Amino acid sequence: MTRGLLYRNVTALAQETLADTPVTVISGARQVGKSTLIGQLVEGRDARVINLDTVVDRNAAERDPDGFVSQYPQGMLAIDEIQRVPSLILALKAAVDADRRPGRFLVTGSADLLALRGAQESLAGRAQTVVLDGLSRGELAGRLEDFAAFVWALPQAGTPADHPGYLRRDYLEIATSTAFPEAHAQSASSRDRWLANYAARVLARDSTDAVGIAHPDRLEPLLTLIAGRNGGEFVAARIGRETDIPERSIPGYLRALRAVFLVRVVPGWSNNVADRAVSTPKVCVGDTGLAAHLAGVDVDGLERDVSSTLTGGLVEGFVLGELAKQQVWSAKRLSLSHYRDNRGREVDIVLEDRRREVVGVEVKAASSVGGADFRGLEHLREKLGERFVTGVVLYTGVRSVPFGDRLWALPLSSVWEH
Image 1 (cartoon, rainbow, N blue to C red):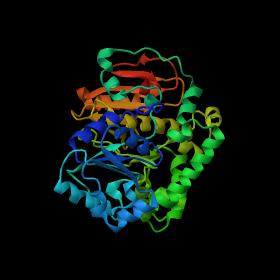
Image 2 (tube, rainbow, N blue to C red; image 1 turned 90 degrees about the horizontal axis):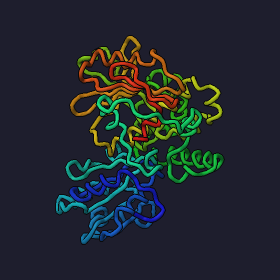
Image 3 (cartoon, one colour; image 1 turned 180 degrees about the vertical axis):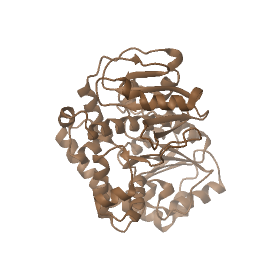
Image 4 (tube, rainbow, N blue to C red; image 1 turned 45 degrees about the vertical axis):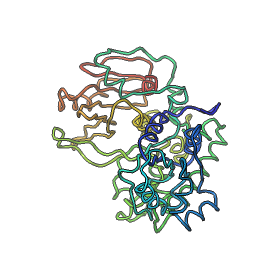
């Protein structure tokens, strides 16, 4: 790895896909480090790297897509920002069908290629996608963290050690920090300017180029509204009234924000033993530093009103983001959702593995925990029986405390310390 660069925890997975798949796609938002990762992955390989943000290369790709993807048959062709020329995706299909050698193509996309306007091919069976997000807390510490594996083993391992190294303010600072590598270490004022420019450019250009919508000016108020109620349920009728956007248009604008990875959508969870579940998804801004910037708050404001919906939403969104990042490399293959039934019983995060075993996670911005914080988890435990592995309440205190059968209160740092 290039000296001085942080190791990205998706690297091993990307190397595996290069070894057994013709096309490896590194997919993620602008400025999360995709180009840097490409540089690391091609080290020691016979490869040519091309960035389609460069005008001459983009013009060549648009003029002759088939010739463009065939320009380096003796090695690997790495194409950065392939969403800039969607016609290349069909050309990749033709090239791979003629030669299915693993590791032929390494491409990055700052938009979801399956949602890309003008893309006529999914590359199903020919490509594997590795999702790259902003820096995880484990990556910043040089650690391969795996919270899911940790909590699945919790009933056998017993109560873990306390985490005295963090205070509530530390957690709020973490939750309001951006995970974009370039902006992470900047001063507060520089970071605010960077985030403002980032949001404006992605909304004005990338989202419309990728998906194509009639009124791109509506994206900013929608994204700002989502940031202000980060992690809240997304009800199109209510969102439409508050943003003056027609309700029928809301799903299209949400797809545009998802396509460029500005927001994260968490589906409602249900199964045959939870038949009263509500399916409304939760939506949060993908980077909680950006969410805090859009909502116009900082750590001082959140600390003064730690019980507010905004504070809780930012902390919950941060945990959702960390778990989504870990989902890519976790030893557990799992889905991530939330649960609420029509009686108002809810669990912030539901993790379910391939055996249909479930871990429930509640997220609290407070520094203490009581029995009432476990009611949703107790309901899931009662409904699921042996399928319920454990339930944890993550909070901004320091103690790890058992709260009954398969239930624990754990410091928030448990998400990245294991």
